Image (cartoon, rainbow, N blue to C red; front, side, top):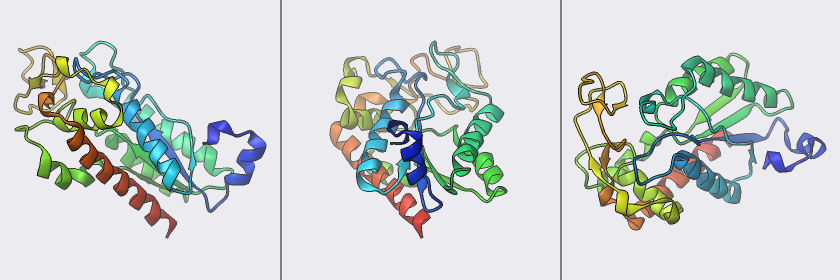
Length: 236
């Protein structure tokens, strides 16, 4: 953990062979009535601990604000502008690359974040810096085999199951709901008259009532293995 080192110690581990992992998880973003605003941060912290235990990497401090425009109608939710989120990642990687490392892996726990991570990756490539990030769609086949909800991707059956596995006390299943309407694009809305967005009075998009610890275990373990495989490939 980079933050646990002195600069003198950091100098020894930040070499050109080092892969730096940067966790990315929102600390203030709505996840329905049954999950906490820091839900993505919980995901990032759990996955970081697994990576630290199983991979030879340096882990930088977590980025806990980024690009989450779809949830701003729900109090407590925050989002950076797209360009700000892009540049935040670019500047962090450039700063650390100056000490030696040229390979970075963003341990990404979001979906909208990809819109900022793709251009950040391209910008860094022009500097001779390799940056890769977690694509949550990479485990969609695993999710499809176990999920029962008719649709949804947010604070839903799968995401709630993952938190039940990672940190069950961070879930209040008595408040879990099914809230699923056809996807209208442009994020979620609490306003039934807003036809440009997907209506969700609860902030859930899917059926959180179907969540279980065992589903969470299956999906989480598949995600951990995918992340570790991503990192292994960067070492080649």
